[in-house]
Structure formats: C-alpha cells, structure tokens
Image (tube, rainbow, N blue to C red; front, side):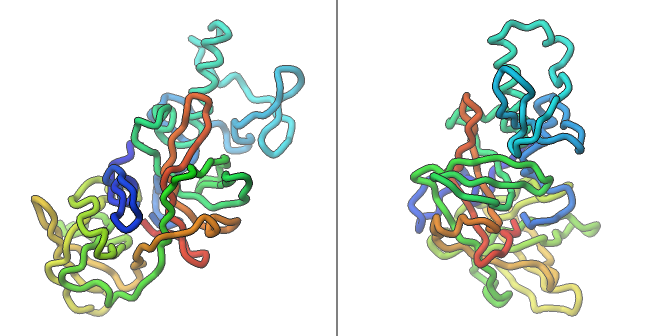
Length: 294
C-alpha cells in the first residue's frame, strides 16, 4: 500500500526541532490498517503461509536455517521461477529484496535515506543497544534501530473540550453517504505545530480513509449518539467532520527514549538501507501504555 504524506510522518514540529515531510500519524485495531511489517503487495512478493515463521533467517550457509526465534526452518523456494538460475550476486540481491518486502509495505523501495519513510504501527517487545524489537499488528517481528537524532513524540489522551474554534487539528476519517466525514480519531496540535501537514489527503487507516489537517472554524455541540460536527478549513478547501463520542482525542508532547520499553505501543517511520537494516528517524509512542490512534 502506498504511504501518503500526513502531518507527523513528515514535517517536523517546531517545538521538537526537526524538519520532515508532511505526514501525520492509527488505532491499534481498525479495519484493514496499514503499516504492517509484512505484506508488500506492491513489490510483487507473496506473503508466506501463516503457519511458517517470518522470513528473517539467521542461519549460516551450512545446515538448516533458523528463524529469529531459533527454530529450525526449511522454507520453500520463494523466488519466482524466472530467478531460480540467477548468479550468486543476483540471488543475494533478490533475497535482500524479499527480506525488505517481508518487513513492511513498500519498504523494498525504501533502500536509501533519501526516500520517504514507511509508517509501521507496532508494539515494543524488547530494547537493546539503541535498537528495539517490535511486533506489528499482523504478528510479524523485526528489529529497528533508533537513530541517535530521532524525534520521539509522546501521544497523550485529552478531553473533547480541547477542540474549539481556532484549534489546529488533524483527523483520520472515512466518508459517510451524505458526503461528510466520520472521524476515526482526532489529534489536537500544540500551537507551536500549527500548520503541520495542512490539507486533505488519502490515509492508511482503513479502506477509503483520509487525513485532514486544518483549523477548526466551527465546533458544534454534542448531539446525543451523533457526537459533534466540526467545520475544518485548510489551504484550498473545507471539510465537515462528525466526531462520535467514543472517538479518541489526543495531543502531542516531546517524548523520551526511556518510553520505548517493552509493552509500549508505537508508530515508527522507518527507512531500510541496502543491507536490510531498519532505522527509525521518527517515533510516536503512546503515553502510559496507550495506543497512538492515528
């Protein structure tokens, strides 16, 4: 699935001292969430059967290969038929491409730090030497290095009353039959981040989801089970967005590396180098074990 820029995956908040592409960060269990560590359909590789271990093999050239958990594995030939007679260097390159494709959607194309990062929603399982072990929502595992200059932001719940006329917000949403949007989450930006990711674009939080970042022109009162309706204006347009009462509402604050511990729920923005090493330059981490909803 193609990743589209949104407020927090790309532009650096001024109060955090970074410059990014415009990208904004999705709840833990939404329909068809993006950002899994496996399933790169765009790369042309098929996902391995569910009963097999992830294709992250650490065995040497001799003997049976092992998966990251240490179990012996004998994977089928996963290369296309046209590759079965390639030279050793070509096979190595193909194996690298497959490894990257298995880690995250589109990551096979992200082989340099010049390309756009891939957004991955995951849970931290262990930390060691500036790296974290993570498991994504589909159960795939990987180790991700946290760059020394990585931006880490804490995502914390706030009260619905924080959304008022003049607030600068972002919201992932889906279109309703009447043309209005129904929010899946709302994040209220600190004043220092006003303007981040301004606009309306496709998003990866489910089928036909969108991300809208803009200024609240009107914030209607809560009306029963329907919630409240927001009028959000951005450069070149405006959207009416219904916010149901149960929708999570959060804000951002500078985070600390110490928050990246086992059990923490994170959104990682990662690159893969030519050796297949994954590195995150930006991390969103839920406060006190919460899950970033965007």
